Length: 274
Image (cartoon, rainbow, N blue to C red; front, side):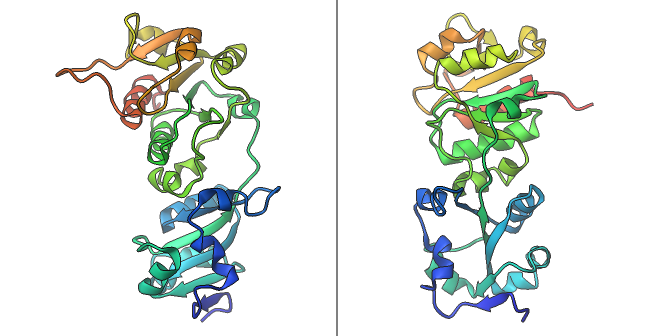
């Protein structure tokens, strides 16, 4: 067995602490005041994080992944500690059954300023106070797939590097630029306007444009703003935007989940393949 691979005989080892932690905030603050850790789950997600330049601290792998689906990752992380055991031991360690067989504790990077993320962008998604981790991950996946350049979040949003968001995004949180906005609602709409972006609030109002309205596609720079589950966008945000946009509905349905709505909006308004 290579020297960097250690079979787990004691799940209480200090080195395994990141995999025992269930409170995401503890990982976020693991090296406070420096950037903390996050957990990437599954070989595909770990590869995307490595490709994006995230630095691994350690790997946790089911034994069969050492020479199987995770062998290339272990080769790439030749100087990184790899801890391994059978599935039942890993379940006792993490508190849940690992269906993907491999986890990686990785160092966070300092977040770029919003100005840098906006440089060169023409289509951006903005999340206002979206707390559900599954929805955050799904929005990132749709944004990356459907022609958006970046995702910006208000400070009250859930962290995109929380484990569930990373998993649901299939690692696209590592592929599309993102950061937090420097101000809250409705000030951030003015901040975007100063940088050339027209803002389109996804909301149910009487004076809305359909999502396929050509005026939206014609905007050289467009920010599509989506709100929190249930309440949607703040009234002040909607009033500050240049456009209010809706997705036409049938059968008496009044709205879609924010993740589903984002996919529809991004398909209609994203950059098209050439």
